[in-house]
Length: 194
Image (cartoon, rainbow, N blue to C red; front, side, top):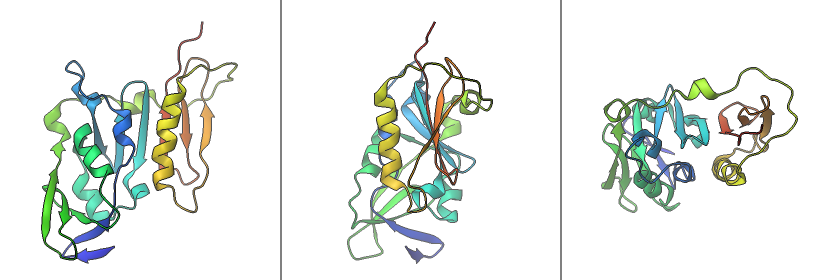
């Protein structure tokens, strides 16, 4: 990372895999087709599974994290961010993600983001994250959700966080996956079992 005035210059993709968790479009629930940043965490859900990830998990600096607070990213923007080549440098400012022209500090492309407050009310993700543990007999879930969360984690995990820990919170309740440093949280909703 290099400094550009107050911005830190990063390179390569960012938020890779998050786009897999979102609906392409949903006119009844438009917020489920975007990810938001709230209190330093990236939140994304399609109502079946959810991730809550500290922005520092992606290697972002404090200035970038502060600039991203309250912003939202639709699926198209996340696809673009996920495909930034490793040799491409970029930084965050008030307008968005600024991709630099090769071997210069001149901005070539800007990927703009939205303000979450302009897009409506995002689901209360904290409400569905279990905090109390109960005994669990059987769970039933769509394995694709687990693959999506694992894909995101493997794109960014640090050397100190190699493993994900699975936490079961009771029959017919979501289960969570987190890392030891608690910078990553994935949640998978279960199929109902009678």
